[in-house]
Every structure is written in structure tokens, then in C-alpha cells.
Image 1 (spheres, helix red, strand yellow):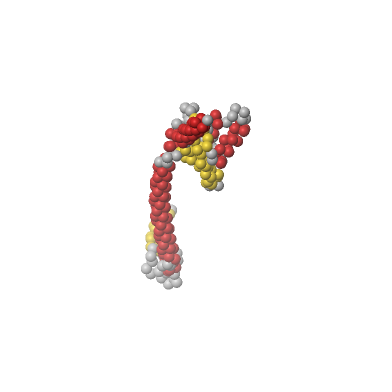
Image 2 (cartoon, helix red, strand yellow; image 1 turned 45 degrees about the vertical axis):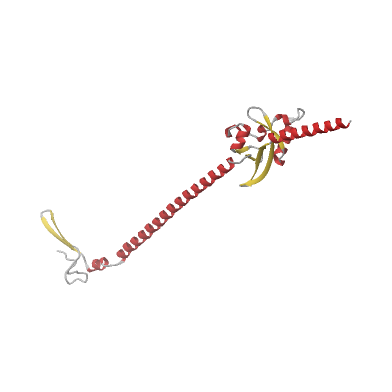
Amino acid sequence: LYDEFHQGSEDFDAQPLFYKTIELDIYGRFWRLDIQSTKIFRQQYKNNQPLMILFGGIIIDSMLLGLFLILANSNKKAVKLAGEMSKEFKLSEEKLTVTINSMMDGLLTVDHQNIILSINRPAKMMFEVNANDVVGLNFNVLIAREQHTQKNSSASDELEQRKVIELGNEALGQRKTGTSFPMELSVGEMIVEGQQMFTIIVRDISERKVTERLKSEFVSTVSHESVSYTH
């Protein structure tokens, strides 16, 4: 009844890439439909563009995979380097802590408001305290109240103790038990991340004071005896 692609047609393909026959029964009449591809379909099928898109996609995917592997390797190296640096920093910190705790003198760090930030082992033994007892408190808690006269007001007392810390001086230290002892302060200033801080080296000079007192008493006694003998 109808033949669109007869052999004389320009688009007829004698060896079609696709061919199918469909038989239909419509109202008692049998119809047969022969469907096949044309030369135009063959030309489009042989077009390299889809193949190029496929290869391009494969290349892009490969590049992305390579980039991912490079980034993953770099991240792994960064994590490893960070771990090594953390380990070295921790080791250096431990060495520094051991060195500070091995000092003969006490060492404290305070901020610009005299708040205690750290205290080493000799200082803890000297004041008979634990770090939790004093860290976060004003350094004034370690200075004996007897150092100041009863006439001093609270403001004057704080100013005097501030002066002792900033300039470095001899002062009376106060232990947790309430007993006092003479100490020598050596103060150093430092700037950490833009913040002013102080290191305070504390030395117990009780023995020195005893020696000086005995020496003074000896000189006084000798001088007194000398004067008596002359008369």
C-alpha cells in the first residue's frame, strides 16, 4: 500500500543497520509494517562526535581522579607532618618543663595584672602550695601581710606590692601554712602574642639573712668589747 523506501529511493539502504517487521490485525485486515534504517541514519551513526564526547568524558574523569589522588596524598603528608610537628612540640615542651622544674629557684609567670599563670616545682615547694592553689590568683597572695604597715590603706598596699613585682626587690613570702620567709625577687618582662607578661624568679634567702644577722651580731659584739677594753 505504501512504500517510503523503495530501492530506487535516494535514502534507501540495501543493508540497513536496523530492520524490523510488525504485523497488525485491524478490523479483520492484516497489515505488515517493514521498518528499517536509512542512509542518513547510517551517516549519523558513524558520526565521531558521540565517541569524542565519550573519550573526553573518560579523560576528564581520569584527570579528576588523578587530582583527587594528589590531594589525598598531599593531605596524608600534611597530617603526617602535623603529627610530627606536634610530637616535636610536645617533646620540646616536656624538655622545657623538666628544665624549669629542675631550677634551684622558684619561677612564676604573671600577666600585666599580676595574675599568676604558671608556677614551677621549686616555687610550689617554697610556698608549700599546688598549682591549683595559686594559678589564676594575684601574686600578692604569696606576699606576707607583715611587710606592710597597719596604716597602709588597701589601695596603697596594692600599689606597694605592685611596685615590688614590677621593679624586683626583697620581700616577705607567705607560705600556705601562714608562715613567712624572706625572699628575693628578680623580675623580667616579655611580650607574648602582643600581651605583656612577667617572669618572676623567687629565691629563698632565709639562710643569707641568718648569716647576715649573725655577722652583724658578731661585729656588734666585737665592737662593744673593743670599746669596753679601751675604757
